[in-house]
Length: 250
Ligand code: SF4
Image 1: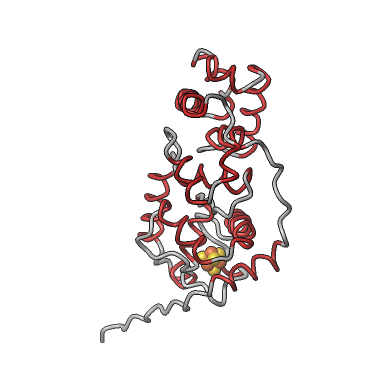
Image 2 (image 1 turned 180 degrees about the vertical axis):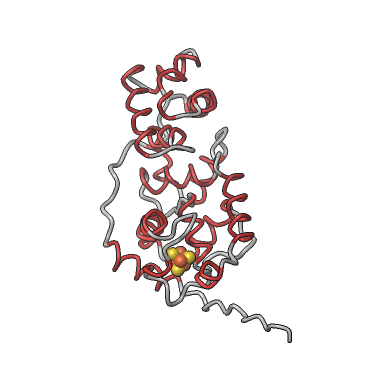
C-alpha cells in the first residue's frame, strides 16, 4: 500500500500591523540610534557592508582618527584609506567606494554636505542617494532613516529573511524590491519599530540556520514554521540566501 504524504498547510500570513504589534510587545519600543550627519552615516553604512556593527564602528573610528575629516579622506591615497579601515574587512573594495562617493558629492554639491536631503520628499532624497556610485536601496535607506529621520526601511539580511518567512514578502521578491513593498504596508511612524524588531527577532530567534520556531512569538501564524519543522525548507531557504548574497554589496 502506498503511504499517503501529509500535506503541509502553512498558516495564512499575519497582517503586517499585527507583526509590528507583536514585535513591539516582545522587544519594546527601541530607542533611537545616535544620529550622525548624513554623509558620515553614508560612510559608516558603506563600512558596515559584510561585517559586524562592532568591526564597522571600529573602522569608522579609525578612519576619523587617521584623517580627521571626510574632506581629508576624499583626497588621501586610497592605500592609506584602506589601511585605516582594515579592521572592517574588504578594505580594498570599501576604500575606493568611499572615496568615489565623497568625490561625487563634492563635485555635485561643491562641498561635503548632504544635509539638503532633509528638505526633499522621501523618494527624491532616495533617488539622489541611489544615483551615487555604489549606493543601493539598503545603504540609502540607512541614511534616510537613521540620519534624516525619514520613513525608509533598510532591508538587511535579518529583515529580509524574517519578513520572507512570515509571508510579508512573496517568494520571488528580491531584497531590492522588498524596501518599497514593506514600506508601503506600514504607516511612517511604524517603520523604525518594524526595522529594529525584525533585526532583533532575526538575531535572537529566527536564525538563518535552525530557527527556534518552538519559542517564537509568531509560532501560531508563521507560514514557514511547518516547512522548518518538517525539514522541507531547504531549497526555498537557499533561494533566499542566493538573493541576499547578490544584494549584500549594496
Ligand atoms: S516560526 Fe520559525 S520561521 Fe517563523 S518567524 Fe518564528 S522562528 Fe522564524
